[in-house]
Length: 190
Image (cartoon, rainbow, N blue to C red; front, side, top):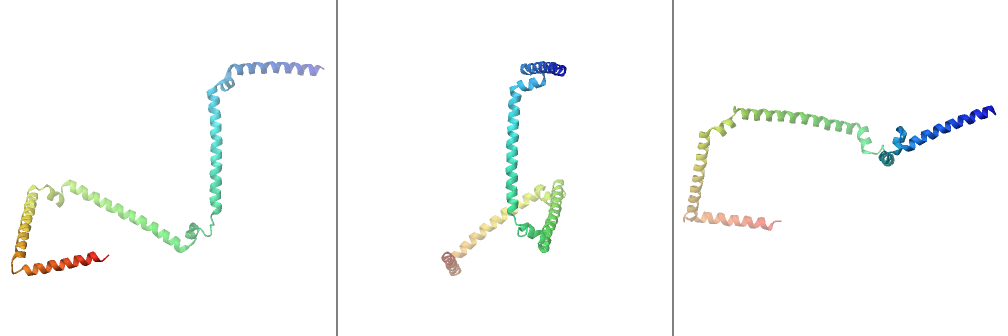
């Protein structure tokens, strides 16, 4: 009876303490009370748990799909297995990568050469810079082009005059007829 009485007293004390703790929690006091009474935190926790569930489900689906794809691959007949196990194919692939590496080095050399050339152009040490910056040379080139245009116009006038000259008229008519025949042949052929 004495033990039962002590146990009963202890139970009463524990129950009283639990009532105090429960009362504080319900009032929102203490860490646990704050957590349980904070509706925003509660919603965030629910949202986080829901997100973790969706993520886990998505990961499970993705793993299942990857496993399905992997299980469908016949490694003995797959292109990767054939390429990697065939010495000749492996050598060809290595050759391709070797060529790519060489090409990359060549492109770097060309790029460096172009960079050097552009630097030389900008520094004014090359012929192109002389040609573009020498005003006298530019004027001479302009006047030469104008002279060539004039000579070409005069040549065209002389050719036109020759077409009408009775000594050369037959030659030019023959040439025109021949040209017309060739054009007709081209139009007929598909």
